[in-house]
Image (cartoon, rainbow, N blue to C red):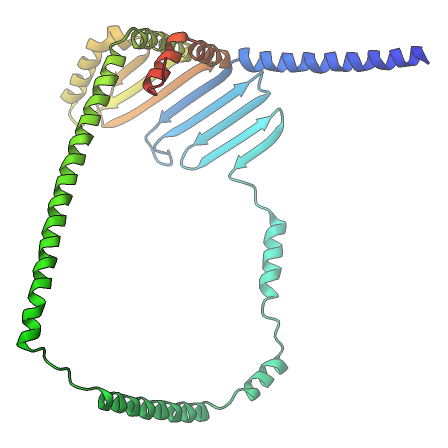
Length: 324
């Protein structure tokens, strides 16, 4: 019995170690196996040629995950895990759905001719409906006229106020005008005071952040972020970058000027860009190739280094105006 129990525990331990090993292996693959990308763009002139053709391919772990995108007048997008397609654009047509929709459309109008005849017989003639509606409209118009005449008879003409009533109302009018002027002055004073307080608050805030920017914590944090961003840019730099252009203008002299400018820039971009001229006709053709890889460990290392940096934590508290 004890031997069987130990055997079961041994099997469970081996399974747990296998799961832990797979988890560690997956984490290492995600962090250190690079994501490779290849981007191609091409332009050709001629009948039936698209203005620009773009092809993008992204792969990871020996094409275990691959993404393909193509645009040559129409968009095509596909994502796969090994040989299993996750999604695809445009999607394949589903004939079953179309047949179901057609059947449902045919089944909408299922009313029999006998039911239509019974509905027509039960509906009253149009001439009788018009006569009854006209009689009801005349009755409602007579009732409305009688009510308006009675209301006009009950109303009495308003009495005009006397001179004594007007004189008695003058102090109240003056008091109301005085209160309005007083309230207006108080509002103006309050607005000016509030505006001055706002200016003072903004000035104090600007002065506070100016001192923070001029401090040592900001300088060290800025230098650290700058170096890490340059390192990320270096890691993201494509391993292969080539551009081939064929340019032709209406005037051969203009084509020569373009080639002269490229000749001056050749020491800088000569290893990546190749420009050729066509002096016979106007045209613009080219081909772009971009290849590179990205590792997630690069971003994780930079994020951890920035997150645990003391100067950045201190700067974050200063920017939030917290006590350091």
